[in-house]
Length: 398
Image (cartoon, rainbow, N blue to C red; front, side, top):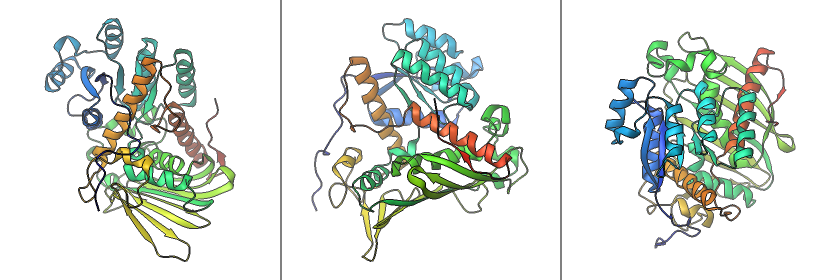
């Protein structure tokens, strides 16, 4: 079959390439490089400034590696926010890729400087911090994106649209799991590059739940369109001894009383990045596996199963086509999802700065409210486990 030359429902063309600054990411930090590659792949951003490390020598060396002008390679993010806000060619947005406990102060500094924000997940460590960011956003009108990258896979958008189109009828149950094996290593090896992940003061009292459980939570809500309302959680440490959990099993309820499960572990031998979602309804079930991201499986009730592959046509919905960059049979993966995410962020930032209102439903990139919902989820899971697995509410309330 012939592929379309232009995706239906394509995003608006860029007025100009936006200028991005990055906080964190020096000395080979993994997530900072991922943000940078996603921004570059989107073809909408130039990375022009950074405070890449709190260590001056590392910040300068990393700035050289990233090709930054030495005058815009900062040793302190506070200085960066002030200096970039004062420049006529200052950054349009900042990407925050530092450890969790720094997300709030860094975001606040740039919002106070009038700069749009893109933050890694989880948004912050406490509900109070989340509420203060929401208050600041309402005061300033700035854009605030959160990098739940799996939500930008083309076939995750396909899932989302199929659920909304009624492909499986009324949603009756939701199941999501995310398994890795990292925590089977000795703790000093597992977290050698990010030891702060096992420091309760820096991650808000949960490790695996805050690291990968939050992705599972967001994926379930994003695709189903239903908020998780309450949960009961059981934490375990099944791998090498460490201060916080490496495994969490949860029973959940979503809006309308829809039941579900959320299972996450970083101590499953042989698991790499096994994120899987199943949403079942009165007329069928939809399934997606992150390790095979090109395909959506539709299993109708009492009818032949269908496998839909990423590409133009052949069951891929028009709203998804904007995220199809090459014909089917030529695989796309997580790096492409990061590019999709940064493309949507750019569209949102450019529209805000130009005072334009985007058509409803044009973009669906995760924002501040989604980030706050993730914080409420993490804190609810911590409370539930502390109470012996009691049911606790997990909806975020401002």
